[in-house]
Image (cartoon, rainbow, N blue to C red; front, side):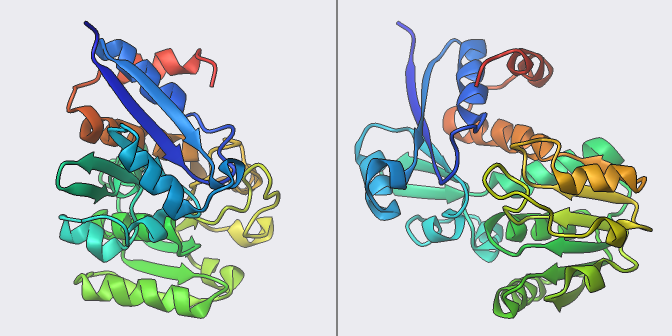
Length: 279
């Protein structure tokens, strides 16, 4: 009998998420029958806490969590990894006998995506726009990658300062700066990163004017619906090497799959398979 695995994703604006496709395809590769549900609190007429509790009681092996709930869910789970506790955001939850366990595969997924593009080259000085759940994970990833300077940019100065404090508390060797002005923070930066929802479907635009990208070396956008955001189009036009949000999506998904099932994947075959699969 084929083993059944029930998974899901809690978030807003996730109708076009490719996570169901990735995990169902991974299940077929491993001989598992995987169901993967989109759980949108607004559409269900419930708040996040209710949807989360119902998933825990409803036979789910685990769930992914996306915008805007990654920091909210961190307060609802046990986090064993001190690094994830320092990040303060969770994107993967395992429902275990001892209670829900929180993990962060955005952190590891971003590092894998960066290394696939640049190997061991340091990120240099990085302007990180957006210090919410994914921004926190990416910032800690930048530390792991050896960034010299991380400029934490947020319209809310308290949020930017909170991330800066967390990075310093974790013993970062990087120089940590804060700003509310992305244009000023982009000056002299090697890397430009968007970790805001600006640019995703339903949130048109870009967090950084095209003129402010000149002189940088690379850019990454955490948004992947659509993949070709205005932020990345402008970066490519300015001559930057770009890393799309799809790469973060793919690598964090692989790491989440390992947590959900412990089953190894042929990642090249998975990438090829999902390229031709409907969402």
